[in-house]
Length: 166
Image 1 (cartoon, rainbow, N blue to C red):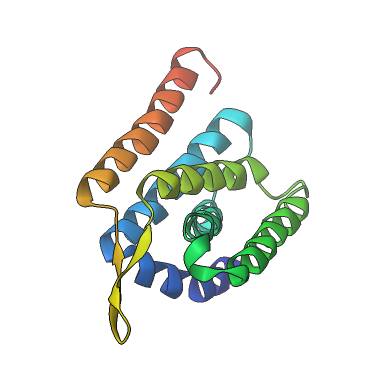
Image 2 (cartoon, one colour):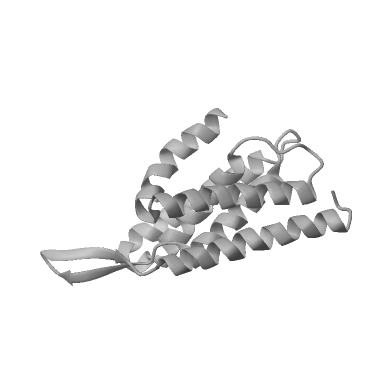
């Protein structure tokens, strides 16, 4: 619980400022849902906590940096390497028997997918000194991404129940 709270404290505010409150909430909830579906399908252990959502935020941060790499320049590449390293280290730590890595992987996939489809794509508008960043994604992108990610994982969960995996 402590790690999850710390990770949310470190990653959350910056990501929420870029995504906005509503889109960030959807990212967090859909990542948690995706991780719990993956856990339900691939693991016999009970899934607890918010680590599935935290892994979704890690994936979203990576997608945000990748999709806006021209804006951030070389710093994006260094930050992406750090994020990948953090994810890999945490997945290695998750190989311990009492940790549900399937939930982490599902949350990561959910966060990656949602952010790829609905995450902010920033563009510079105007000229110096009167320029601003604007997000090229609209509400429709967020609705579509929510439907695809949430619906896709819901179909996986229903399918797993129907064929008797759980």
